[in-house]
Amino acid sequence: MGDDQKPIDLARAPDFVVGDVSVRPSLRQVIEADGHETMLEPRVMQVLVALADAKGAIVSRDDLTVRCWSGRIVGEDAINRVISRLRRLADETGAFRIETITKVGYRLLVEGQAETAAKARARPDRRLLLAGGAASVVAIGAGALLGRRWLKPAKPDVMPLIVQATTALEQGTAESNDQAIGLLKRAVELSPEDEIAWGVLAFVYAAAVQRRSPQMQADLTARAREAARRAEALHPGDPNARAALILLEPGLRRWAWAEQSLRDLIKDHPENLPARMMLAEVLGAVGRWRESAAIHDKVDNANNPTPGRVQRQVQALWSAGRLQEADRAIERAVSMYPTHFAVWFTHFHLLLYTGRAREALAKVDNLEGRPETVEESNFQLIRQVAKGMVSGAPADIDEAVERIRASARAGAGHAENAVQFASALGRTETAFEIAQAYFFGQGFVVPDIRFEMRQKTFTPLADRRTNFLFFPSTAGMRDDARFAQLTEALGLAAYWRETRTRPDYQVA
Image (tube, rainbow, N blue to C red; front, side, top):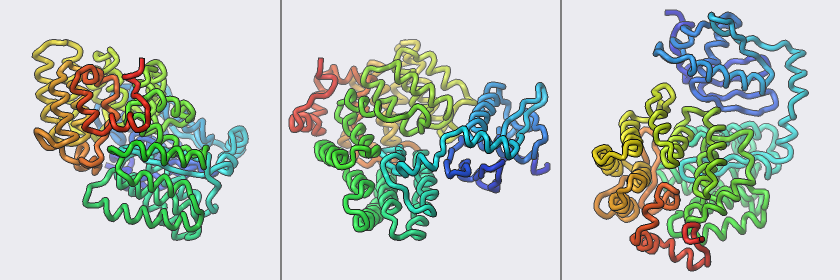
């Protein structure tokens, strides 16, 4: 089998150039001449590599399935979706185009130099956009957020590394976090007096603390504090460094402190996107979703909705009772990242809990559309939950609850989902049982690992999340007298008293 017939391994695929665009398959990055980067889904990048390898020759659909789907039978919709995404990329960059040869296949054609230049002139110059504000990053929990409008530009040789790092971090995985750290360490080596590079590095380390095992947290915390100290020495009050130090503090039971610290940071730097998004997350954690959604309203997610940012935006809109807007946001994200785990599961949960359980079930049964990094047992669990929601049959619900209880013992992320599943299925007793284990270790132990060990993400007992307690999926719990006892034990009631605020569910 020749190389042009072997399945594409992105980790080993060499970098290449298409027109004036650089492509890095191993990092799934497409980098334009002005430094702007686009991160592609793995399948989309594989198809781009296959078409580029053909050097203008036609690539049949059969060849694409061999090289990009390992020979599995795939429907036309799957291939059409990937080609459509590549055509959007072609339009955005102006460097190439994808031509369809009816009933034969596709070929990639590099645009002529004059045509490329004309298209580039027609697009906004991203270098000018960056000159108005460079890169900053914030990660909360399992995701990351990118903002580029509130910092002055770093030195020219450092800026591409910062942009690459923030792009990587937004993918929301341990591996992408490691990539971001490596890129920023290189940035401070090249420019040790660049406060932006040090500040962003501090934040990336702080983000790593949020997701890594307790055994690694001490070292990462020390590195984050040292990078923050370097940034502060170069630029007193550096907003990235301040945000990093806030992020390092455990969120559970420290909501009032976090809220005030973030409001102080925003007062000093009102254009600071990361601080505003962190504040939105804190407000969601204490049940103030309407205020959280109002913060998301001021963030432009329409043109570049990254997976982590969309996940939080949809959760906020949905929990604030703005379902139509949540639907529009997730549909836009699905069109861009259909198999990204954060987007896929956010879409599934939105369907499941908003009277569209049949659609949620169909989504699970679409094998080709599933994220590839998730174990089959997880899909079997959520399929049974959706089946129980659709049928309402006691036997189906009983089987779902049995699986839910077992999953809660497998990890913190599983337990958060299990509480919601049980509540939505009308098994409030089970929901409270799992919540007691999740928050207090009562009844059984919920491990720090979130889902699967290979994902390397953790939520320790001292920093468990509370936002899901205020999702619409857990409305049944909030109608139960035990919910007041739970919020008292967690310190949420004390927060409401201290700040003289009330969560949305207590407001008429």
